[in-house]
Image 1 (cartoon, rainbow, N blue to C red):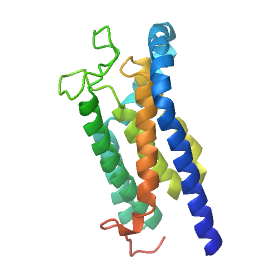
Image 2 (image 1 turned 120 degrees about the vertical axis):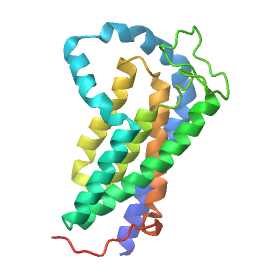
Image 3 (image 1 turned 180 degrees about the vertical axis):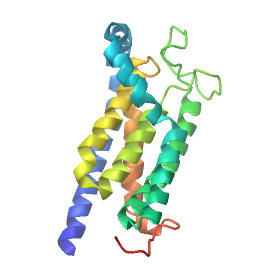
Image 4 (image 1 turned 60 degrees about the vertical axis):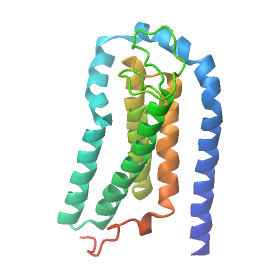
Length: 214
């Protein structure tokens, strides 16, 4: 039991260190990479990638993820699958908490989107003006939060989950809706929020499941 606790703590600590490294790297990314990637992005356009992004991009919309997680929660309950039920319920919590933080930040920062038609990508401060909510990326925040949650319950699926999250996040760059630092910030928030909530998952309302695995 003690070994298990030490292993969990070490993994959580490792994730915090990785997240901290990303957090400190965001300002450098914003100044060194964002403009160049935004300039190069038109050269990436090709039909196969257009089709692929067209399929995966809608997965990152908030309503889509929430519906999927709640549907999996219901499926886990009806099929008497406690792990699926718990994973989906916990993923819903991470989605809501991470999404609330992301939503507040993007309107406090007020950064123009790459395709907003403005020459500057510097933030303007608190704003509810359309197209001035680029930082951080809502898609990246949501998909990495949910992927991290499911990866905890289904470790064997962690790489496919993270790969899907990365593809969805890349789609935001491809569609010229976000800068690289927006996506990294979103992934950072999603992973950190999920890692933090993992320590309190058994205290979340309605998280306990009384049925047995069928």
